[in-house]
Image (cartoon, rainbow, N blue to C red; front, side, top):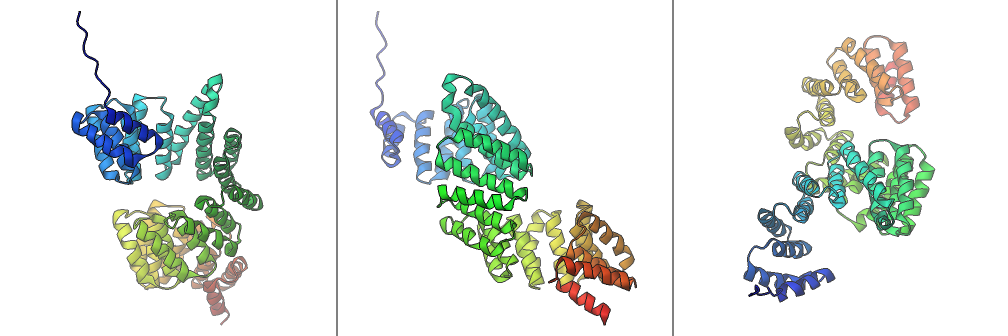
Length: 445
């Protein structure tokens, strides 16, 4: 009986795979191209070629090849996973999330896809969704670790717990974050890079709890393990800033940006520290740099517009906010800053409309309420403003800005003694509050 002839393995594919495993992508690529010319759009050849292209930065071309491979073999989870990775690198976060979900649907135990999906949720500030995904991963890994062969999964568990600890910190759950990060340290073993990252997240959680000295010590210890980490230099600057050591915070944040000039969170923290140190021009320049990287970076837009307001460049503040408000017209922070800028230009009716709109979306926001009240006083309507300031003070009872606006409102209502007392409280809270100083002097005069 005749037997079917054996199919000989393709020598280019064999050698290309050896180069691929060795990390020699530049040598592997021409071999895969020759195999592709002979065999056409076989999914595995398209995949190997896409890997090479992505490694040399040709992300768009790699994406196109993975899409073509999926069209040929839609049920292969490896293809959807890799397409998700390249989509994420291209900034297509929704597409990446879709591909990772496809991978999980076809391979429910694909831990890397679950972690990547959780990472997308973090990038999109969807921390509750990230918490759910990571909790499921950790539960699955815990069960696997009960078996003898599961020990090899401990580094994956350290990474998963590290991510969950960071998510809990971002959700404001500081004590649970510390607990999960302590377990992550145990799982990390002697992995120095992972231990450093975990300690950095512990520093953030400690800082969130107000344990500033411990947070600084933890961040410094993390940096001894990874001194060239942009992330950890930023963490040290961040916890120093929130500990009130503004001048000390600037140097480590600047070092983070020397290591990674495009590190957007460090740019914004540096601007905060410079503003707090009175270096508003420096802060404005840093925020402009952040917006060149991402013109719709909300935090940078809000910081920059407020810095312009602080320096009485009200029209520049409006110009900064305008394109953002066109795309997100109900953003409370942007509407609040728009109202402040319009007030600075004495366009009081427009300022009232902007702040009224903000207050409809944030009925209990103390700063929006007090700013709306201040504009009503400008318009000669202090009786309406009074309730807004009193509502704002219930939310932030000792805030110097709100106390100043309330004091000015009371003075406009003729309650001069109470106005003096309120303005004195504002100055006790912040002796450098210029608006309170001017208003208090006016009462004395």
